[in-house]
Amino acid sequence: MRKHIVRKSLGLIVLYAVIIVGIFVIQFRSDSIIRKTIRSMRVTLVEAESTDGSAALKNQFQIAYNGIQFTGDDSNSVEYVVGDSTRKAVLKTYEETENSLSLIFDDDITITFSLSEVAANSPLIITADFPAKISYVSLITKPLTGYSFTDQKAKQAIVEGKNSSYSLLAPMLQDSRLLLLQNSKFASYRSYVKQTEFSIDAVANLAGASKAEWQNSLNTLSATIISEFMRLSQSDVSFASSLSEQTVIAYAAAMSNAGRYNEAINTVPASFTKGTKRTYQSAPFFGTLAKVAPSLEMQMENYKSMVSHALQASSCDVFTTGNIADYFVINENDPEVARVLSMPASLTNNNFTVAQAAGILHVYAVLKTAESANAEKLVPVLEPCIKKITDSCKLDNNKIRLAENDTNLSVIAAVNAGDAFIEYGTVEGMDNVEKCGYLIVNSYLSDLAGLDLRTMCEIYPIAVHDNPYYPHFAKIRDLDGTTIWAWTIARDIKITQDENRTLFVDIDFPLGLTHYVMIIGINPFRRIQIYNMDFRTDPQFEIYNSSGYVYRSSMRGLLLKSRHKSQHEIIKLYYREVAAQ
Figure 1 (cartoon, rainbow, N blue to C red):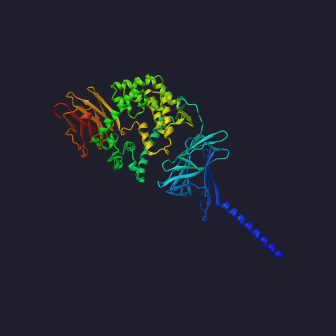
Figure 2 (cartoon, rainbow, N blue to C red):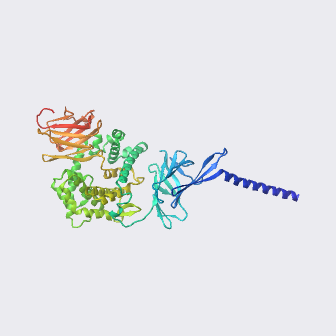
Figure 3 (cartoon, rainbow, N blue to C red):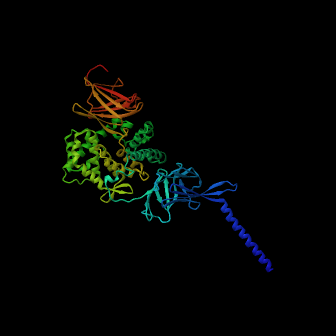
């Protein structure tokens, strides 16, 4: 009996040993570790042998680089959100190049890790591609042994080791996860050098202080405005009712500059185009000139009142007003304009705010570009204005942040200051100031994830100057003691006069498109021709499928619908009885 028990026990021991060894053998034979090195980026994947002998990638990976790791497995997988549902992504395959590795998951999710430079401390760029139905994708992100997260914020974490520091920038960092959002699928990890000293000359050679990167920032801003406007118009039932005129104008201008003018006009909700929110500002796109023209008159009166108040209060706040520089150009012969431009230099101290300093630099650049003699009146305060903005700057991790009275400036105020540096540096040929401006703007526009559509549309006219489709004032010429100017989206408007005092108005706009323009400073005329055809004033002119006009004598305004049968539409205004030309 005892021998039987011993024999049975030995048999079980042998059986268990065989099973255990078998498990190890099977595990060893079925799983294989794939290790790859892409420059300094270390990649670990796991491949399993299926029952038919073929190899299949397991849902397990690690990407390690300069103190940080991005990982995933069945327990802590890559996650994504569809509606209110959080789902686990399954790794299916991967693709590699000399500089990058792409992890491809189910549900059309791809996460790519790429090195932008050859150097060992090259920035690591993380990008994602996934369908519109997915709100965001997240993956586990942790420091490697010997490193730790310090100063972690919602969008940035500093990774510090014994001899090196790095900065992780992402759309969102949350609970040991990096989130890539539907409207911001980009993150970066790069060397971090904290600097507290700031000088314009010192930042001129930084990577972000380039015109090319600035142009990329503006291109991204334009594209994001378009995509976000379209997304909200389709998904937000309250979008149309909450639209501001500024938002519509920026969207229409960005679309038009991308060659989508008619699409822009047709995709703005009718509740806005036919509603009561509209003023002269959106008239170049949507017309109703006679209705909104009084708002243009009112705006010019407001500018005049602001100038008078600035003189009475010795306040430089007037320089922070939008389009005030154009008012100064149009009214450069007005004695009050000359006085207000001389006022900053007459103050006993130059205690400008950042906004005032930026406004003064902007006005100077516009006046200088317009070859106005009034620009010289601001010269004595240009250096104090530059110093004020410079003193508000702090360089941190190769980005500039602006603060005033220990309070961080808003993104709009900061971009405005950076743009003032760009404009001033450009007209004065001061390369270091111009580059500093590029870096300021790039610092604030490199990540648009935290900006809503309204904010981006307020930034647009501040930062984008080369888009003629953004409604603007245009001084055309001085004639017989009167300044003729326009509110328009035309590329250019020229006015010439012949020996019979006939005016030839040449409007440059793309063939086949229709826009609206208000030309102010036009004296009453006897007769008008458009495309060599006589036209009469008609209150209903906008409903016809042709050009047309109405004249407002109270503002000496020619309110014109311009439907271009050619790129240059010529309007002739006759002041004498002469034969038609």
